[in-house]
Amino acid sequence: FENLEILGFRVLDVQDFGIFGRRDFEGRSAIFIINNIVMWNLKLTE
Image 1: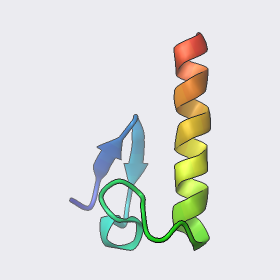
Image 2 (image 1 turned 90 degrees about the vertical axis):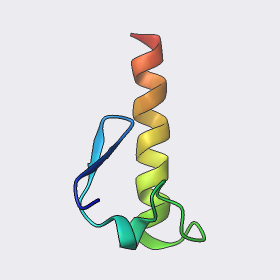
Image 3 (image 1 turned 120 degrees about the horizontal axis):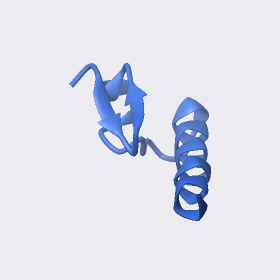
């Protein structure tokens, strides 16, 4: 799972982020979630 693709984004360290980027919404995990939500919304509006 080292190169798991989530919503078109590559997660290099799945254990750090959790499979869906959720780890108590702290640190890089929270940033990862926010970036994915923003980019996913941008893809929907294209």
